[in-house]
Image (cartoon, rainbow, N blue to C red; front, side, top):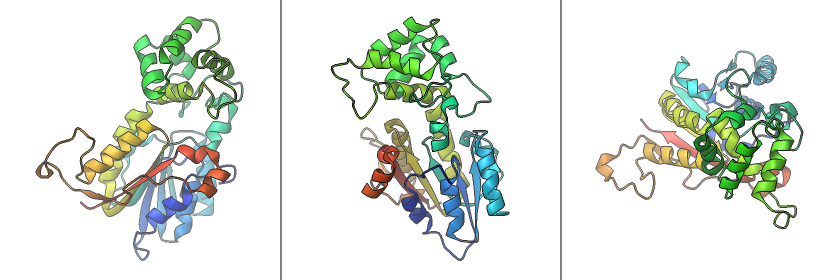
Length: 310
């Protein structure tokens, strides 16, 4: 949709073109976002319908536009994909997860996802529930902050950042995106090291806090198996991840469904494994040079594709 650039759009559409064109298809877009992937799916052919999910209240209006454009073919539900089990749809032809933020979310200052614009430090995907990032930073235990900054954000100077967050409580520095970013930048990188790097020193910490606030890894671990179970045999599951921890969850789940070792320490025999799917992408698919030049935000995107057998 206008104002939003869908990542790996060409490659995602290619993944779903393997479905039999003569048969009606029902595809789950578990992360509607800006609606770009959904609209392109609807454009593939007239006998294809999409079930789209998004817990972001702002996404409903964008979905309504597409519902008028494609009558009776788009079914929107304002829920998180962790709640896929609650949907009545079965025998899906395919399912798509795009685990990144939409441009609408990132570029809307008051959502608090970006430190390029001063705004309340929110970061919630669903603003109707849960703690804001500011509330999390002011109240989380030290262990919870360590998990967010070190484990989720993979910030090398996590000790200093966590200490700075705790010291800043009650000062107001944690309430605004830019003041929080300045606090982290002063802590995570010295002026000598930070001479206009490609990645702002606060990027990793912002990412880690966002993941913690929205329980993003937890919902991925819940949503992927639920979507896989709703696929019909032959159905396609495609997942775009942007973070190494997300991709690790996807990779291990895909390999488990394909009867492969999930990681280097998985030494089970083949007799102990069940082959329920086949990998359609051995290595993750990444954006081509033309996409990177047009949309630099896609640089960390990885697409993995799986086809259900049983």
